[in-house]
Length: 273
Image 1 (cartoon, helix red, strand yellow):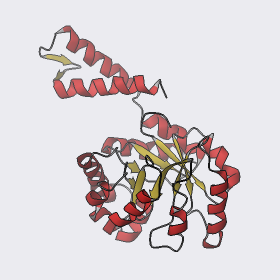
Image 2 (cartoon, rainbow, N blue to C red):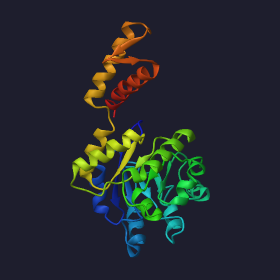
Image 3 (cartoon, rainbow, N blue to C red):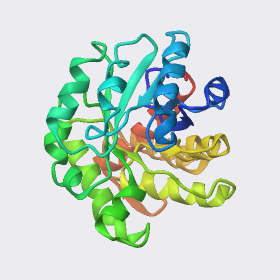
Image 4 (tube, rainbow, N blue to C red):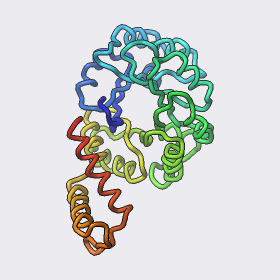
């Protein structure tokens, strides 16, 4: 997955081991083998067994376990120490003790990504963020809407998305991961949803189909226009040695320079992926 935090997380159903390698090859920064929503109850034991047989450090993947209250949680968690598990997603995360249970049964450096999908999980977000091995939040926007009776993906969820970004920053986590776009064949919708997430301060997005990966990755990288702007800002600032200067009719101060530096650093890092 590289040294940079992933931009794209691609789900693959745990009961489709024939698709594991295809998901790895799809270009996502991280792949999540899903033992929860994608797997019918009767297939959960066989899906877990298929993943256990396939796991290897040669192709690390993340694993979404079943919810802590489910009958499958304990056996799912038993897989967390297996080599090849690069991270664990906890669905419907609400309690610090559930994160602790995963942390105790996972590898030393295995990150945990709590899925915020319920009102209680959102309410407890800061406490969850301080849990051992927690790396970043994932916003399960569809389940969240269901739990709160919300109808709509845009301004209806603005407050909740912004709060997750804020809590993540205060707690020192990576920027959170936004939820899925259910429109598989609508690249423009995927692009629009991803750009919204980036504007709000998210750092990544869940994908449910390989076709969504490329636009998601692209949207989390600086555009050509942003690169051009950043270069003009830095050239102007360097030319006046810290004195006041304007670019494109706008005053350039220290926060503007810092943003330009961040963009150019990101572009350099992207070249090392």
